[in-house]
Length: 446
Image (tube, rainbow, N blue to C red):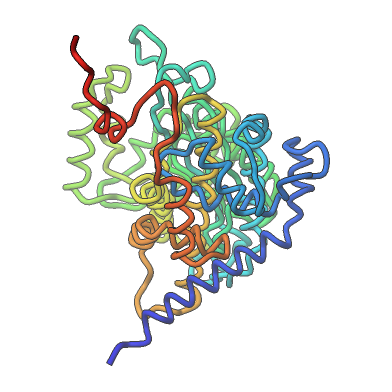
């Protein structure tokens, strides 16, 4: 007898897709379009809802072209729409509009808050990270890449992403070149902050003035310690040599002041296993970048996980910081799922505008899958925990079902529409296709 369990999962996916459609219908897309200057007047031909649904349905396309975009928009609105009309709308306003759609849409979802364990004292838990994707060199003027001390110009796309771990909400998405590094993006989190938030970020975002602002706004942070930052005693203000204070195998947990700004933080050092410490030291010594050549002090400190936070010990004991910080790895899994299974690497790089369109449409698909994963987990529809990587692989392979469901079509009708519109060669006067060449009559030799 067939188990009803797969039907339950299918129904959960269907229900969540319908909820996604409903949220789009209740989002004031016209207001978002005007706010981002994507639309200056009321839409005359392509209503914003149908336009957005079409773009999300296209997100799994391996090669997003203007022809395909126009064709699917035509299907969504029920009338013809030209690629020239859409080409005129490409640009930064469209990118900003789609970013706002992603954030506003997913911000509305009513998923249950996981107020458990170490996070019960916080309003939200914000993960902030970035990922980089190399681009063809002709895009270097729009998306400057690393110089690496080599001649020539390189191009790379950097995506900044902020999500709320507790509510499965996307709060911020932005695109830039590689040259806007994570330190420059560190203050971006400040306009998202609410009192009671917790921010978890890696060393790339380590900026003392930002830590100071987070504390002043009634929020909290957790980060690794950067070994070149000066430490001062919280009472006397005298400098401290951390390497002399740490004893092998012992935890160190104190209030200190960091840097010339004298930012008050709690610094916690937890010893790691000898095997892990030795591996870290070998890696540090073998680094080919001579600027990172470690001294004795740094090599010694590699025997500890060292964190800075403003969360008091009454909320988090020292032993809690390492497992909590490991949750930052979730954002790395998100990026891996997007790149490996949901096509975030398959971009139209012909122009900067087409690249922006390609990235943002794929991000809408990626973010929807991220949301579906948490929704299935929290609904208790599965007897085991849901793997984001596996769900991404499944929906990446079944993207036609996802697109058809969004557009309110059966998969059979979606396939039939594709066959009718995209199966045949174009009629061209300047080129013959294979069958035309094959059917040519032989030339008469005189």
